Length: 468
Image (cartoon, rainbow, N blue to C red):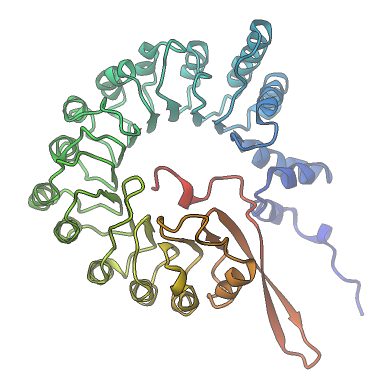
């Protein structure tokens, strides 16, 4: 019998494919230590996307370590394409603050291939950081905290002239005031605009009218918590887009938003003929039956692939009707890859219909009544291509009333799913689904299903503020 093949016998050309499946930075760092060959292939992937999140242990200390590395080791900084800073040291002594800031500036300068930057920690983004980012010639995606509050000069923002993607979180009045000129400067390249305002009144119909003429190349528009935006302002932007919108988010807009009028205008102009993703919210003042009818009309011409719907805030009275879900599935089921429902009740029959008739479904996020959990597994078993599931309980069931769902119950549901399911979440917990095959004594093969902690350092899609 010949000698068994060893991992080192594999052609080196296969190594990038193997390494690409490693998601945890700590695991990639370990691969870099194996030998020179592994180092060559693993190091670019390890540094391609670097991020600091607020929930990271010693996150603020890691900021200093990260930028010291980027400042002192240029051969590593050159691999960085995406920089995500969601935590940052604050309340520092002047000397320590200056030291960290210098490390940041030098580190950013060394990231010569930087394509995307997220910097959302309030009070940490400064004029000098923005001036340094402006000089990153390949930067095309920017997500920042828009509360400038004397930390940075908003007049710098229109100098980012080659952006493809722009996201502003809680923008202040002076930052909003830069939008018309900023949009004008990026009108040839900007394809994605997200404004997250958390009920601020600064984004209005007037603002949208002012930027509409520069929004001609937009493909994705997401407005969150903009209670002064009505169908008039949104239509001003939508009607200005040359090729048609691809992704649209309308969350927490004005109670005066007329879905019937907006639907009629979009259909008359065939404005949504490229729409693949939509995110909608409904508030407590809305007549749900009429609203659902107008939404169906709005989406009638869209090649929809992703559907997201939720209520505004903590409102829990609305229930997504079986008829509405059935109509969405009948019109778009052969294309839908994601069906996402947050903070709205729906029946187990609606979930069963979605799983049975959405032949391309890969992601399902739903709200399930506690009494329906036993029936959920057979529903999910009908979805042949399903990859990710997240189940939430109805909002009015407080943590005191509904016990934390047991691991055994979750595993029981997962075992009924197709083998394609790789991720399963319940309320605030997210698991990876692991399957291992064993050969029994009679030669048959059995598969053991287990749940392991979520390893991907990225935020799970179902927890994002903006779902795209």
